[in-house]
Length: 70
Image (tube, rainbow, N blue to C red; front, side, top):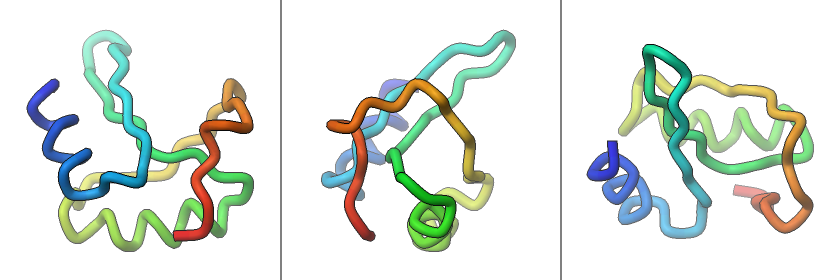
């Protein structure tokens, strides 16, 4: 999991990424956006390298985590 996170950070250095464990899976969570449209723009780019990526809603986002337009 850690090597995948590092690989992601190398490819997308401006996007914050963390991993979490939700039994039985480990998930990488990348970026934080104010709107669904902004998240979908990044998702389109990420699908090239990470075809199983999908948008997820999170209620615990702090303003300093937000990613600008991508």
